[in-house]
Image (cartoon, rainbow, N blue to C red; front, top):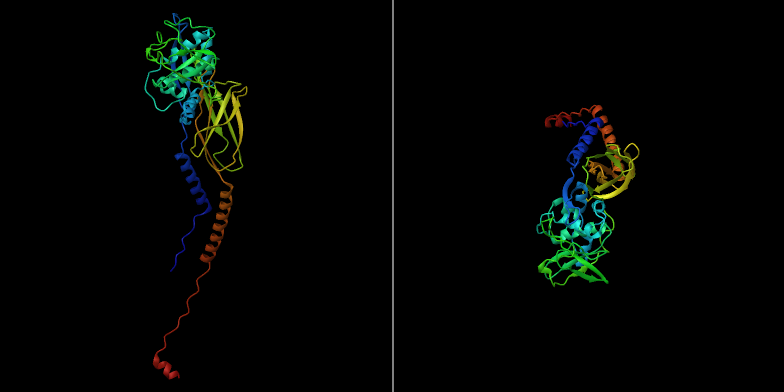
Length: 391
């Protein structure tokens, strides 16, 4: 006898589907509120001064991840200019100008910062944010950091590559010949301008190399000038920088839905705590595990909240996060990462067809189970003798 197994009810099917997607949500990487990377650098009011300032530089996890995910390959030495990121380090430059009034002192202040980063050979090249966070680097990485700060401060700078010595420094054009150099002043002439040598290595920030001073190994060595027209023109965000005691902050993000079909509108909302109005919050999105990209920049209202409407255009699994980069009082922060699953419309059509097919199957199954089976007709076997007698 054939037994008909009962099909799961619609209620049971719904439970199975919900459990499946809850499992997916559990397995997908919803990040926790990430901590910032904070470093403190000491600065003198001038190379011979006695007043010490303590500068705190803070980098959000998202900013570090953004630069870490970028292309680090170079096709030629001129491509090294892309590792100079003045916009990202502009808050540092602004703070240096708050204690210096002379471009030479400003440039020496930038050297004091890189002289406090431990030396470690590094391959390949890295962006300044990576060097700050990892707190180590070599001559080219230090040069990228120093050039970024100087360029952000409005100074005319170039990179000086000593190919025979496998070394790099920064060249900086000043409004006057360096006053604080403790030796002969060295410079390279390019485009009818004098670029004074700024040696970025050395661990003694108080007595380290100053603008115009040249290490003996570079004396007489030719340098290739790398101009910075191709340096970074825009950035993912900025570091936080302040001489004052900083106050932490938080940024929050929520999505109006976790599962939608393509073409649906998603409301991305959140806030900064404490309540801060008029602050820019950058929204990032990652599709199917790809690197994060900027989705939009929104501004908080008087209540510290922000709102953005996003139109989902294609199916996939999306990760969304919010970041703000702080101000003179509050350090920046990243939100947790929220996950959104966008189903293609074809899935909706397929789902409708599946439901329709299941409904037909349920009806047929129900009809077959309620109809009584007909008894088979029995025939008695006739004996051969009976048959012959019949004939």
